[in-house]
Length: 400
Image (tube, rainbow, N blue to C red; front, top):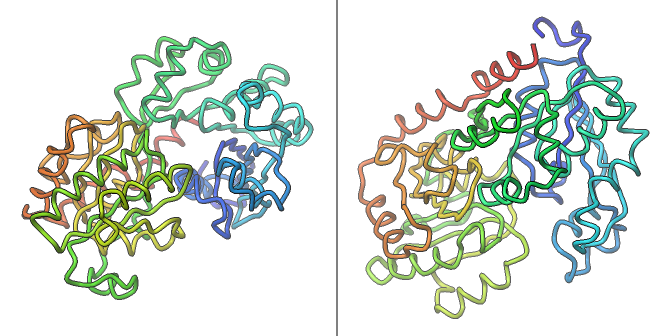
């Protein structure tokens, strides 16, 4: 897989549960987009297919629908460079009966398109066990070939799959050519299902996520220079991202340091509950829920902050923390399944053992604000471990 792209006969099929649209209406899946950007120049063409619940365009304004269904009303096929992105609709409704069958529905209603791309491509790679990995297994089972599977599920989601012993998960793992997990602690669990299991971490776009002038970024975003800025980027999902305890920790800090201000970037199902928490704690002047931000603007926010926060209950890896580190910013994170493998405690950030320990979270944030960090060292560690050049070679070795 070397030489000029046009001289390579290989085409690649990527099946993924999430992928952003160019207009930003679907704000999830940028880590998959970064992965595709990393791998695309090693193939003549890359086809990305995204199984997507069919939702008519007018339904995106129905606030009672889960956000993923409202986003599905905004998707459209597009291409960039040598990549073609196809959103494959299938009929479903947000009920458990259908959720358990979505993999089969997506496969049945898009079988002709999937089979055409499956036969056309020499390398098949799925992201997430369900739905995409399951669809790849159905294609292999019925039409031959093989597939690689990267398991991006956060820690609690992954353990639920393991503990369920559901055949749709287990068979997807056992029949894969290889399993890739973005953290190391789950490798031994996966090896019970597939001996060809390996650890390859996520990558960071070091060209976009890089140190910039904090003052210039604050001017760009309209953030006062005198503020002590704490930043959190993540889906508004309380039972994963731990927003409520984060707000409590910040409230404690503001009692001693009135310059502290927390900005939360994201969007999703729990936005209203988080806003209610902010109002109930009388923190409206100290906490800003920014909402969704275009991915290309996230580096400005990273560089505008003093400390980045990721106090999650569960992560598989937590790519936002290496994006912050790539900008030279320290990260305060919890032991959540991913952060303890990424953050060098005391060198690139601090770790909190228990996500429920509000006092310790506040203490570590305060400690980070006073700590003498070395931004150049933080970035160097990130570039050496997570740059696209190194991660890409691991995948090409796997495919070869």
